[in-house]
Length: 583
Ligand code: TSB
Ligand code: ZN
Image (tube, rainbow, N blue to C red; front, side, top):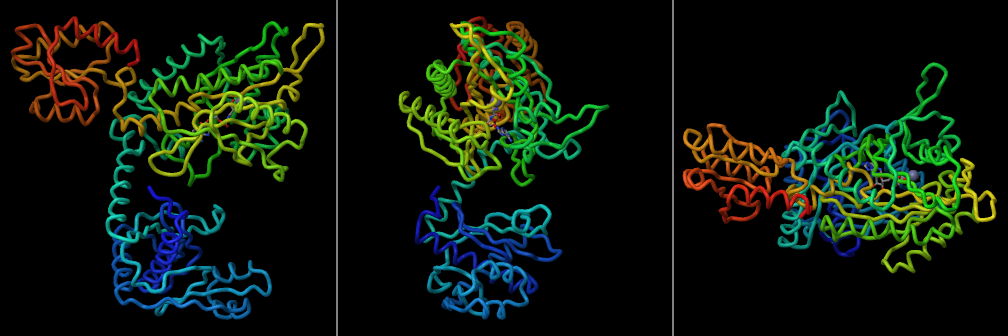
């Protein structure tokens, strides 16, 4: 998809189209008031106060029709420059515009754009006439708090897009449709992978049996990898006391991302947003010599984070998540090698899943942000330089992003693009000189002296939640055999004659641990086969007279038209081998 913001002409068209939208809304809802209407990567939006009215799909159609009408009228667009005083006078009945104007410095010249009966404050530039706005589409609407603050009034946000010609618009709409199909929220619902319920809460998905099966496979997969690399896994509680998080610094630097405190008897608890403090205590439980290091403590750990209600999204951004987490305790000399091992593991995992579209981001602190980041220049410089050195040495391409570090240290994040919405971080690997000091961790060096270890925080999948979301989008729900909730779907051609043999096949496959289903409903064969394909089952067996007599199976693989014949035992072995190899 084109980035509208980065294209001068498209920006102009979309900016102008936001005004056209506002004008049409004003025609249909004369009391409407307008906040801001910026250009975004995918087009534009306008935040509108419509009083008690909530926009519906039909309204969107009506508004679009009115926009077309205004565009046909073809009025010119005039720019006018006025003083702040004049602007305050002209927009005196519009509290939103007054708020905007008040933010301009004294003496600023403010520009306005007028088209027909509609004037709006705007920096511009705009196209010369509404006639130029022909190929546009209103895409969706949502609620949006004024200035993004949930204490403020909820405004209606209408999104749209405008292109130069019909082909470009149609191409965009087609891509949008495809993205919708690929959206893990749709796939997750269609394939019964997860659900949400208001009674459980926002951003708290429930993993259904199909989703749980996928997650279990992912857990087994990464557990095996980590175990082979010397990780030791633990289980720790998903709460900690406020004091634990005061010691770690989360209480001062991460509080706005945490659920509020709860009191039980005399103890003050929080739901944990991260697992580092627990793992620090696991490390401190024993004395360590330099010979024991690196020590790698891993956990599939449930965390809770306060994510804004507008930001939560399916499994991708949740408030209750499970990290594939580990904290590696290393000597300063081991940082480079251990960090590289993590990056190698990330690359290895991505290769196994066939993930190719990702980028490495070096996330640095924002020196000005004293609230989020620990104020210790020396430590930050050391950590950031070390990380850069390791990356340069390792040779993976990366870009730098200021203000994206964790409060305790810089990170290497792996960024991916979901079907819908902005990039997110999947894997992360972080360098931390701070928490070991705050927890007074140490090991005994060659000379019998106490030394402070360095901690590497890392999550390969990130969270099982986000990784599953991404995987569903990458595969469009057609997961590889080893991850599929149902691996083989058996359909008898005719229940009357072929059900017994189908049951025999079912029992055989199930007995060797294959996840198999038998569709014995009294539905037409074609209907059942279609449904099996819609459910994205990797193998569909169709068993009729020929198979009953030969004791063979006929199978068809997802996304293949052809059917193949094979002996039952041979087929079972092939499936077992493919699952084992995680093909
Ligand atoms: C890696 N302390 C470290 C840990 O040791 C940590 O918590 N890092 S984190 O904050 O970056 O989170 C780890 C990963 O969790 C992220 O890389 C991201 O993939 C995932 N994640 C973060 N927030 C959410 C969320 N709200 N929903 C789903 N996954 C999330
Ligand atoms: Zn951590």
